[in-house]
Length: 202
Image 1 (tube, one colour):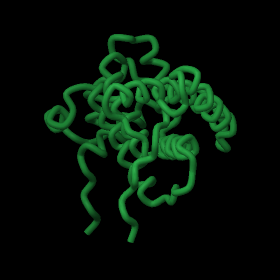
Image 2: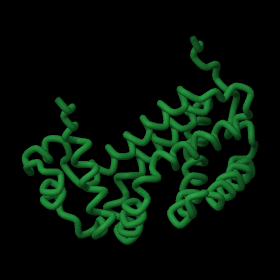
Image 3: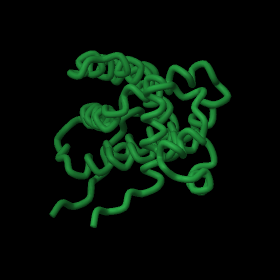
Image 4: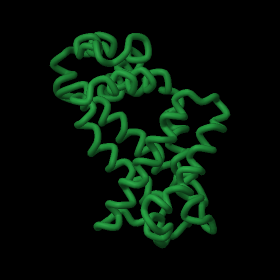
């Protein structure tokens, strides 16, 4: 017997598929429910809004990156290189959804009210990316790192949306932005910090 698909996964996939075809702003929850082949009651149980669907999608990407990092060996790399690798893993995790993300991003830029609730989850994601690279995201210094990384990510993300499959422009932008982050924060060490010791590997 084939494993049953998680209703949340079905809903997220359906929402992204529809967004890629018709955009996000005019997309109704009823349309998403129909595409996911679930009732509106089921959809409402899992997601109270379209924004909640996007937040759940972002958390799923976080989980994929954290799993990928756990399988990678980054010992010996500089903090900047580790962070570069982690962010590129994030782009790789989103690659299949690029067309949907392109349409969603364009619509959200025209709707600041709808995009505002996404800011906090986006910063939380950046905190996880720092931690995945062995960089402390806690306290006041951590908060500065998170916000600095959010700016770096946002700039690279805009390039990635229009980049080719080789992602050369994205990698160049990301590398440049990580270098420039030292000037934005003040000192490179304050942004990247000291790597935390990772868990023992078997």
